[in-house]
Image (cartoon, rainbow, N blue to C red; front, side, top):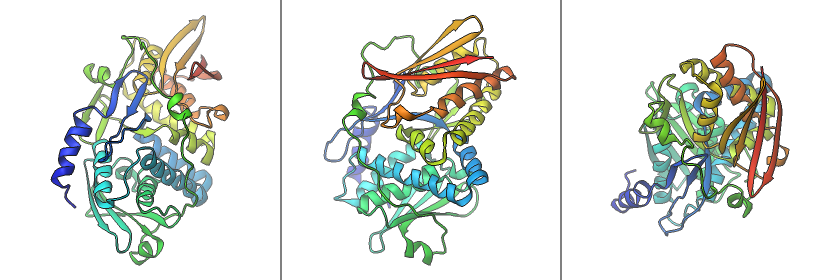
Length: 373
């Protein structure tokens, strides 16, 4: 399905030119998506590495089997629905709205995404090339697969009866993702998981605790600064670390918390640690790996980061870490895994986190990570 001329013009004027997806605010990755009706909305994201999702699915499969994989799919489906709801994507012209939404996703997640829609049977087929995660393991349950089902179910207003299956097409990195009612998927011989119960809408605290503060220090890092230092590079649908060639993808901030709740903090921690360990190994040894980690986490949207040193103990402080309604009970497994994994990859020895403390102050979530070893 081709984008109409009006949508092309909209894409240029409303998405590309005004920098709707902001990666130039240190500590914060902000989306201010405009609908065709002119609405502007606030969505906060952070970057996770593509291998994180591959390791996550592998760990869940080994430890929890199909039950755990079904939970991952459910997280992804709710994530996709929440993305569409937070961005207030209009439902009045489904085909145009869906095309616009997935072209936006294409710019961040894939080399190309082509849509085929049949409203008579309520089906959406995405013909994808080099789609993040899916290209590596033929899956992507908590992100691309579940996410597609969630977005399509939002447009149809039917969360419980729309699911998504995957089929490899013509080899290589090309995959078809089909979102449709169960009977349509079964008629095509596609395997799929089921998820029920759409997520509840976000309240005012979402923007209150996630908006960037005034007066961010000018020396703080953002993705643009890492690009200028040749540590990151971007081509269509792919943001990569230049040296280890690790791809990073932006996700709306609820996803890490929902993964922790669904499959447990230990599995999320293991996946985060291994994925960031590979970054630490692949990147050349830094003169100060703690400082580099601090700057990297700031650029990836984990809040404004700083390092304090006291004898053999270092404390990583993250001010303005993405806040979610379950932050108060979180153990922050992605942060713990990222810190230990990256530092161990750089040092080639064990690094241990002794304590993680969190509090909300001045409308900002603040995390302190005490590191020893």
